[in-house]
Amino acid sequence: MDSSRREWLGKAGAALLLGGGVHLPALSQSSSRAAGARVVLLGQSVPLTGAAGEIGLAFAAGSRLAVADFNERNAASGLQLKLLQLDDGYDAGRAAANARTLLGTDKADMLFGFVGTASSDAGANVAAQQGSLLFAPFAAADALREASHPHVFHVRPGMIDEALKIVRQCATVGQTRIALVGDDDAMGRAGLAAVQQAITELKLPALVASAMVPAGGADKLDAALKTVLQQTPQAIVLVSLSGTTANAIRKLRKSGYSGSFMAFSIVGIDPLYAELGKDIGGIVISQVVPSPRPSAIPIVKEYRAAVDNSDQTPSYEGLEGFIAVKVAGEAVRRAGRGFTTASLQRVMTAMTDYDVGGFRVNLRPGLRDASRTIDLISISADGRVLR
Image (cartoon, rainbow, N blue to C red; front, side):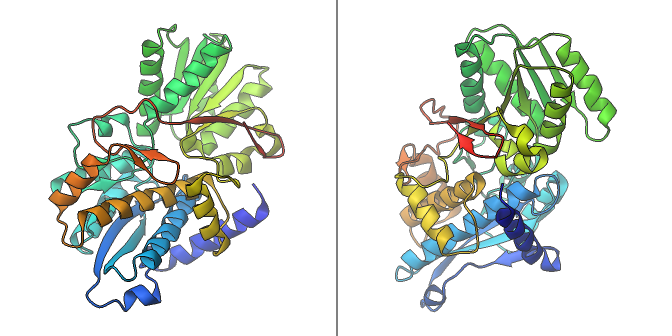
């Protein structure tokens, strides 16, 4: 990751954290003057600090670009979006408190873009208690996709979809001795369940080993990796944030391990490269949105045009935030200015094959979408993304 991106993230974090939280309206001057505009409030709890801060900042920034774009395009329609963002530091308890503030004090029309499995679960619980919706969580457990959670709507594919792509790739190249290392938290456990399900669906041998790493202490990681190495895996799947992932890769390579490393999209390419530098070479990472590099894909071109008119730099997480708001805006537009939570929920449930500029979205809870495109990319030693 280049220094300009890290500099921008630092400045963005400082700006967002003034006062400990932030309410960012993202309303254009022309739209704010529109008489009688219906302003739709999206309430977002997002890690702007902490272990997932770099991912949260990029996702939040891409979301703001799409809000500004929606408001410019709909200035004459009387329908506008407003994004309220609060920092939760990647802490589920803070995310739950933020959710209650956003829906209670701020009167948000829906919760949006919570980042992290435990935080997304917390947001979904608060939304259910208060009769609201949670839209486009980032890295939620697949349990939140079941029909029993009709108030939660996902834009990104599920962990099972990423797991199937990863495990199938391992099998394709003859790697059937697969192990898993993950953070011992809600995200890691959800990833483990997804990989085990993928292995069952593909009728492959069970994991040869799995190790969940508790927070704090290199000795715990060392013990976990020793357990894994004893089973001589051909490939190791990592379900963890950049810190655990980078430490595990360094230690495993130092021990002489020469097999493959496969990581879920939640690791974040930029923070992982910041941790590993040239040691990132050869690692394979799944991605659930298209590459943010120059592309003929309409949504990517639209995102990059918005980035070019801002102080941001392109990223996978930024593009995902941009796409999430685009889909939320389309649902609101279809529901109309007089929508209620119930009518908006019906509209979202009916969006089973929405094409947002070359990226397909199925919002209906409980409907497995096996045709979603997931890319596997590798990273060169100098940080370039390779197919």
